[in-house]
Length: 386
Image (cartoon, rainbow, N blue to C red):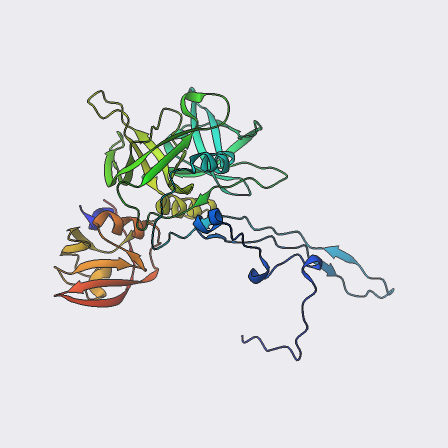
């Protein structure tokens, strides 16, 4: 594949230390105070990290006026949204008996989207943040004039489009509520292997009620699929877990219930491929959604190489003169095996890692040069226009 075209204070120490008040008197907790369930099921679960926590209210006291009165003015409460993320372990243990538990945990984070535009269509979405940010497929919300979001508990809320990226087929819809939303746990495709269990969850056929669950395996990685609109959807996860109409924008999960992809398409061409489904890797979906929520333009990182799969790495077949890889010291024939501490065993895996970074970022690159392992730093460029 053509990666050149497609890879696209010093803060002084206080004079004395004062122990903090007991936990019950504080809004914050040190990580060591958090309870860990040491049950066997908890040990099997992936380590889950809360990226941010609730920020307490701050009371600002005004200056003493000439009359001697104080003016108390509370500052606005700033609450950061929470994303639940999972770190993929070095080993993967399959528990084939937890599908019911997975469904019970994830279903509340799956929504049904009703889109009104030139017509009416149905899709699915996955709650990314507890402030109501929902990830879905861009084609689901295309042409939307009105979006209605139906939650698992039956509530129907008006949604608004925060942004969409047609190339990755990822979009974000926002909803508001006076209480936090239940979120899914977002993982990574690092180390994902063909044959691992896969669970698809969405709202197929516009059916009322909770989301539907289907099971299968990861059938293939790095798939390319025509969008039907002049460009290709690349580096997709293929699965035989059923993805029916209306399920697009839903979640593809591993056996622990961690999101590994956003379902984007299903095959129904009558040529024996019916039943195949495809999902955008979660690493790409999360990176695109983060930029859309921040109001940043979507820019794809570029390494400046053309390459091919090569025995557990991505071999540089052509090097763009003056490109990021060129300046980093790579040569034709070198095999890239790791990018930013993410193992790279195929060109597709390399592109997935690149898409999770923005142009201008400086990251580490590990590669093999004439049988010797080397590590260098590379500053990513922005992918040139086609």
